[in-house]
Length: 580
Image (cartoon, rainbow, N blue to C red; front, top):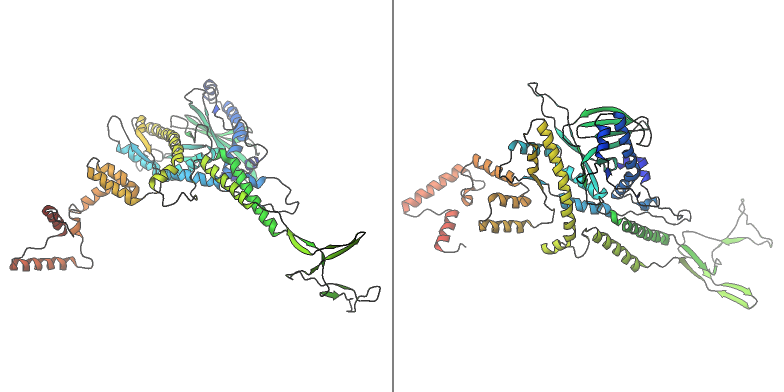
């Protein structure tokens, strides 16, 4: 995390310019140079190449990413602006806004508030392999895939990029001594400490990935660097303790990997790899400054200086100065010396006009008392603040939920118009996010193929992530639409179950399985739903005995037995009568 590296944190603070001019560029390397340095396994050559890229990342890209992460944490640049207000005994409030976190949380919740559904879609028409499907579900469950996606999306929204690392656990043996397939784990990596180097081709193939991090132990900082290639992972550490990750590296260990490609995947938020609110940092700073200055004005007003015109009138409120023994202190004329009796707790001041003699006569200065304050243009300040808020929401395509026009009474169509801009952002970001997920699935396929879990890794390309926007919904309207669709007879039960999954919270496959389980437990269940429920608090045996006696009595009297609720409805529909 950013807070773990105080040196990087300090370098992200305001220093006269926003970023380095080379920040946020893609890292590339000629493929032939890469193979020359890496294929022979020369540790010294590999360390030299990695060191250059780590130094570039730590000095150019990491400060930018750290600053964006600070804004998300509420540590805006307003906290570090320099002025001389405190030296002048004036208020110096530093109020940081929460726009960064609000915009990011809105974007993450809207896109991934509902879990991603991994659907199998094979153009050849073949069914999904149950073993592969179960392996994928188990992988997602053990890695808490739903939370992982939200962390990845948060990193994307804040910094414009996110990194996902796949790695395997140690292989273990079963009871018979056979090695089991190692579990595959995935972890989101801090964008401030990771990057991927690509070749120079148009397809941009990844050559290797790097993760570097600092460990502070016993007041000494040690940097560690992990290098991931398509077939090996190298673990380095800095040769000595320092505050820079670009020192000499010493190889600690290395191991083989079986993912068939670099296991560190880079996700992009957009083509420019920028955060969702990065372009509006100027407006966020302006908002912070305006709010802070208003708070300063209010505090300065409370501490305003009192200006008094005229003279104090102490004629009725004087006291005699006494010596240590209690005798009055006398002046040159032998009269007791009197001074005003001042009590700071008095809620009043006695003033009188002041008289000043001059060559033109006597000037009279009327008495008055008032605080020295500046007039605040509150209306202009509020207009300015509202314009900043509007611009930030508009330019980031984020709906302002506090807007009067954004109310719970708005229709679905009205809400869709308000979310139109964010929908465009979501559509593009889903496409880019899907690229990362598909690469994850291909890496899984390669690993399972290597461990003979599957025969063809390309089968993983048949899985497609399906996103459901997390919108406010009216469940009653959804159910009514489902009923109308069902009445048309044009849709399958599976499609209707998928449609209703947003209401029930149960996937279509799980709902179908539940129905099959209930049918196995009681084949006659739900055949007559209006008649099947027993009376509450009645012994079923007593109920059956009562029914038998009623039927026997009616038979003796020649009466027809009463119809059940279901029979009554059927009889009414056939006879054309309306049930009341």
